[in-house]
Image (tube, rainbow, N blue to C red):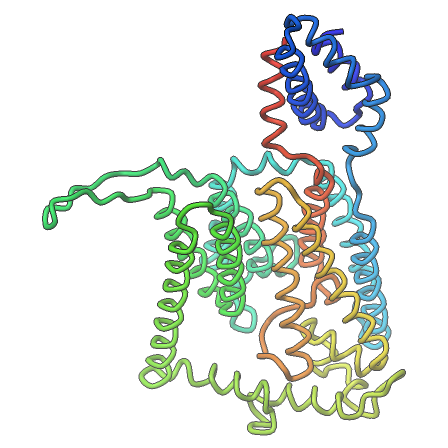
Length: 466
C-alpha cells in the first residue's frame, strides 16, 4: 500500500472535513521520515514507502482514533455558564416586571430566542471567512456611528442613538465588536513587505514607511474618535484598551525586534495618555466642559461630597449596600420606588439585585461572571489558530472589562458610566450582540484542535500526491 491509498483509507474515517488536511500533512511527514530511514539502509524507494506505510499500522483503526481527537469540540462549560447568566437576567427582569408595568420578561425571552437562533448559525459558520472582509466590517461600523451622529440619529439623555424597528439602539454596543473584529483582521493581514521608500534629502538616506502599519494606526484613531463623539468616552477607553491588549499579545509573539516594538507601543501609550490629560485640563480650565467629568469621577468613589448632584446615584447605592441582607430585601425604601433610577435603569442591575435579593444571589452572579471570564481566557490559550486566538481575546476582553466596570460602578468602587452588565442587564439588542459574541467564541473553540497553517500545508501535500 502506497501513501496515497493509506491516506485515503485513514481520511475515510474522519468526519470533520477541515481536519483531514491536517491529518494528511502530519501522517505524510511521519511516513516520509520512516521512508528515508529505509532508503538509507539501501532499500529502493517504492519498497521503502510500502514498508513505511506498513509500519504505521492499520489505516482504518488509525482513522477512527484520529477522528475522536479531531472532532469538533462543543464548550459545554461556557454554554452552561452563559445560560446561567441569562437565567439570572430573566429572573431579575421578572422581578422588575412585577413592580413596574413594562414587558421586561417577555421582551427578554423573545430577544434570547432571537439571539440563540442567530448564535447557532454563527456557531457552525467558519469564522476564518470573515478575515478577508475586515475592511468592509470596519466601514460598516463607521457608517453606523455616522448615522447616529447625523440627522438620522436621535438624542437620548445626551447620547446619540439610532431608532430602528421602534427600538432605541446605542451604536456603541454594535460597533465596538465590529471594530474589534476588523482590528484583529488588520493585525493578522499585516504585511511588512507592503511598504514604500521615501528619499530623505537631509540625511541622504531612505526612509521605509510600512503602509499597513500606518493604516492600522489611522483607522484605530478614527474609530476611537468616532466612539467618543457619540459621546461615549468610557466605550472609547474600553476599545482603546482592547486594541492595546491585542497589539501587545501580537508583538510578544515576534521572534525579531520584539522588545523594540513593545517599547514603541509603550511610548505611544504614554504619549496618548499625556495628550488626553492635557486636553482634559484645557477643557476644564478654559471651556469648563471637563469640570463636570472630574466631579463625576470623584463623586463615584465618594458620593457624600456632592450627595444631591453628581454623587446622588452613589448615595442611593451606598444606602442599599449599608442596609443589604444576606438573603432577602434590604431595609430601604429605595427598592420599593418604581420610578427610582436604581430600579428603572439597566446600568444598575447589580445593585438592584443586592437590594432586592441579598448578598447571596448577587454573590452567585459575581462568581458566574468570574467563571465565564476565566473560561474565555483558557479558551484563548488553547486555540492554535492565531486569528481565532486574537478574536477570542478581543471579544473576551470586551465582556470581561464591561463586567468588571459595571460591578465596580454599582458598589461605588468604579466610575459612574453608561455600561450594562453583559447577559444580565435588560436590553434586547444588547443581549443579542452578547450572544453573537459568545457564539463566535464557541465557533472558534469548535475548531480548537485544527492548526490551519498545517491544514494549508496538507492541502498542498495532497495536491502533490494526487
